[in-house]
Length: 111
Length: 128
Image (cartoon, rainbow over all chains, first blue to last red; front, side):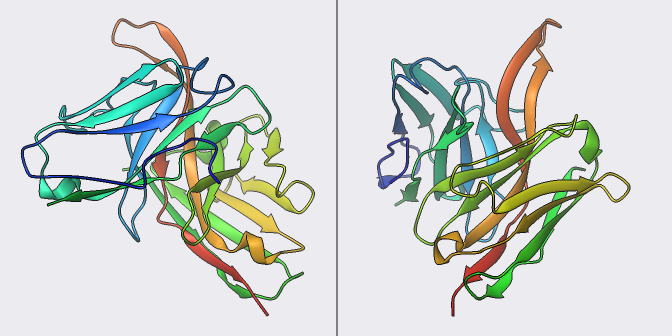
């Protein structure tokens, strides 16, 4: 069982918006602004999409945005496109010896 | 262009040893924090180990005492020596570069902790 809780799957139609939640605890997401999100296609290297809760790396579409409220972080993808179909993972740095905790991943299906 | 390429995975019997390699290009391994992260079949990602630029190392409790992270600065290569392997170590192992700080658009120093580049992974299967 993963330390952070994500929905197993979400889906949306092209052009729609979806949000993936990532729920942690008072030991990680709640007290830490080092939440990041990764897009992962099978057989490929995971790709950084969001870091420090809300920041987008250079080259990542502004259709991707991040937010956080208390112990739940969220990734929102607006204007869904077929190429957004992938697994998405959240992670939070922690102050414990675990260093990072990850979510179990969410499979996004673009209908 | 930053690239990370893992190798060394394979099928190994329980109790056996394996060494994974991660060849880096486009940056200097010794100047960065580097980590290993794994993903067991059907499961989420799990952080395994980190090596600081100064050489300090840390491990997840699940691998402490059995795995050793190291690097060869002359080859820009990261390693993970895995001993006393167990069935539960079966996973795809990824190496990743760790960002611990950056300077924002205003030039201010910002502390952070995330993985900015990953390799494609190498599969380790522990089975008799």
